[in-house]
Length: 270
Image 1 (cartoon, rainbow, N blue to C red):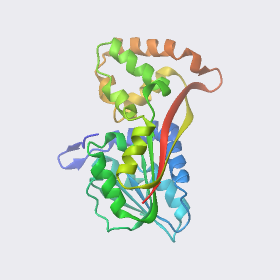
Image 2 (tube, rainbow, N blue to C red):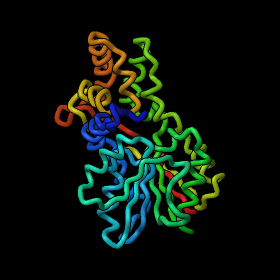
Image 3 (cartoon, helix red, strand yellow):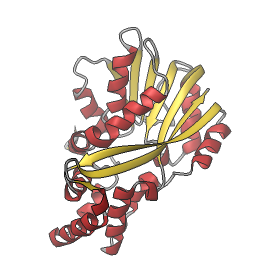
């Protein structure tokens, strides 16, 4: 997501919406699962790459404690600026920067974790090489990458409805564009990592309705909001009706709309 600024001030509105609408429901639980999957312990020095508004970093800070450390880096200045406000005591070292050229010394982190980052890196090999550089000997890298759209039916329904309305759905489906676990594992092995493991995990999140889910994507989805903003009021109303019908089987009378997200969780050693 591009940086937004006006008159020298950093615009954090997109980051605030992301934190409000999508971190509690989807990104927060996935971030916690990733940190746990990495085997994070007290005293570890951990780096959250592509940290967004910092859900994984904040969770990791609770685990590593005062004897460990957490650093976090994201290219988007708005995300980093907002993340700092969510860390009022300054427990985490926040950096705005490029994952392919990070401001850290060699071998300083026991754990590196990245939730839904790799598919957005145009230079994946360079990014992984840089992660390997700052990872300690036998340190662990954990990455989550969404599976293909058909394993994420709510997002796929929104993308298909957008296409029916003549709108490019790339913003919705791109996060799910790197879902082959074999390709992911081969990439990590070719980057020089050892003990490569890739497992698929599924999570369920609940929204009050399909309309609520779409509203949350439109407000807080870094990739999907632009596509949804191209619809006028009537178009958005029609899209919501179509998605509601498509996802009727996922509605629970008590919990609301069940939104399934499936991702490949990779764990490797330096």
